[in-house]
Image (cartoon, rainbow, N blue to C red; front, side):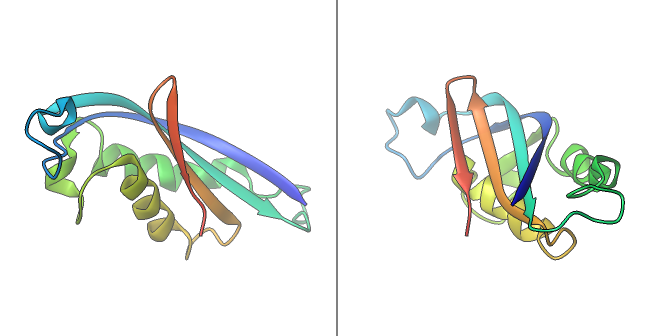
Length: 117
């Protein structure tokens, strides 16, 4: 099995308003997010790639246009946790990138979550 990954970044705010009012994340706050998409395949393409990294610019463009410098509560169809962001991005790109098997979202250098159906 061959595996590759590519990282993308964006900055955004959100409010996790389902939490108790005294929870710090229930207030508006922001993060410098790192999104990592993970791809895998048994067989390489005719160029020797899992996927040409250049073709993944569609993910970069989408993230920049949809999430960067936005309030995630306004652009997400559901509660904007890291877990839900990962699932949202996976669902958006799996039809176009069949090699996609997981999306990782990091809000801080010390935390991350991975959505892998």
